[in-house]
Image (cartoon, rainbow, N blue to C red; front, side, top):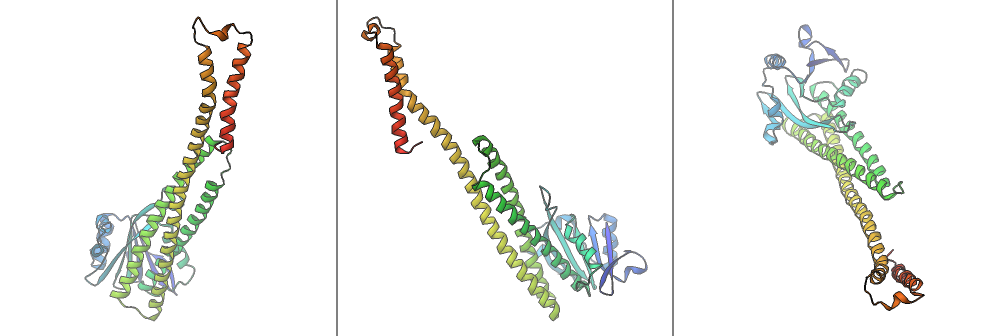
Length: 321
């Protein structure tokens, strides 16, 4: 799919990618393009559109390069962050002939929000470079919102870990298992966001270094760089907190298990001496003087009660239970 936009009074308006409006087009958004659509753009702008495999390469030279007057910059962007399993994928930004081309195979909500806002509000989209910076600002702003939500979720999980509502140990164990899964998903999301921030920082730095910009663009570039640095630091702090909460959750589970084992061990210790007494008097020897004693039965009962009470008293005194 190809979406084309032109500038009218500082606003982005959708236009046809073919016909009379072609020359006025300043932003071409390619979403999972077909071979025919790739060929159309390549013939139109005389560039070689990178393939999906080329976009996914990790070498810096494959993600940031200039070729035949065109600048290719690829960043990692997250999508579907509100779902249980977010998506992460490369997005390539191409500046050529006064036009911006974006190539992607995912649907980040920031792109739809940007096109809607840019059609209503002037976002500094005077040219292709202005559109690039405005789009990057939208992506960074959306990532900041996601980070804020992750921080709130982590705070709620922290409350559940250290102040569990369930009274039964079995219910608490199930809660802790669910918490571990949620923490794992949050850590995966943070890792993808951190990778995205890193690649976006490289794009801003590369564009400024290669192209060189006027004062207004330099200010936007610096602002973006500061925002990305701050968000990276915040994401790192959240990641460290998740690591702490993971360790704390595993520790709480271990404490619950140790408590159960301790109770079982104490019960075995308390009832072992009475069992020994009962075993002795349960032996079937013919000569056992106590068998003929009229008070033998109540005496044996008292001995067994005392044999259970004394270990229990000692364990309570030591604070082991």
